[in-house]
Length: 311
Image 1: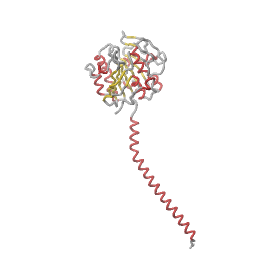
Image 2: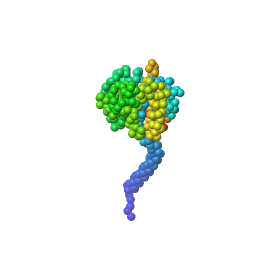
Image 3: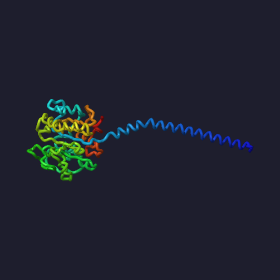
Image 4: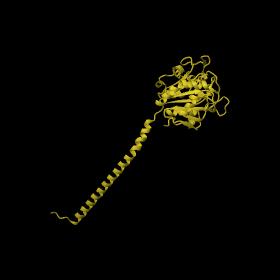
């Protein structure tokens, strides 16, 4: 048997102490590993749920914006002459502090389309304008746009009036950019509005004629037109991640506040009222926000809705 000296005993003790410390270290590592594993397991459901919520939201497949004419919020809201519009207001989101940007009609259409009135202060015609706009921004992101004007004589028609005055270019901002290269195919008669709604562009403007937009016709006539032409789309939109927005170009011609009705209805839109101030620039910004577009002109500084779909 080999005899151990005192120095050897000291070395054995030191080695044993090291082994103890190593064992303790391994034990603590095990505890930490278990704790970390438990923390990850506890956090995983929340993270997964959050990820599922993110994945479940997507921009609307289609947004249809119908632009009516020259009526105030007070004139339309609750009116017995507008039963369908008020039905939509109950189904969807009614904005109680929405406004046009100025008078008369044309600058408001141009502002909603491009983020600026482009120096226009009247309904004069024609105007050839340049610069970015909602259609060009959507096309640049490989999305689509079209305007459907009732009684427009032909695709791409650039005249100031047509169909006995039922169509007016002052209500069609898209044509003002055709000379600068915006495709004429984006400027469509309403008769070409797809019956198969899945074939609609990403964003579409719909412009009723001078009678059916309440400019020359009555509120009841405009309301009936909307019921006839948009009722099926609204039902479809609720099941197909799409929206209908109904707005007015301006309030009554002499209105100082220029307050207008604004209604959003469709998939995921929780019914109720929204008291947020929103003008045409803000509405444009809200649409831009849905598709990640760079805000145009004055829309960049305007109040906007981050998402109409809240359910």
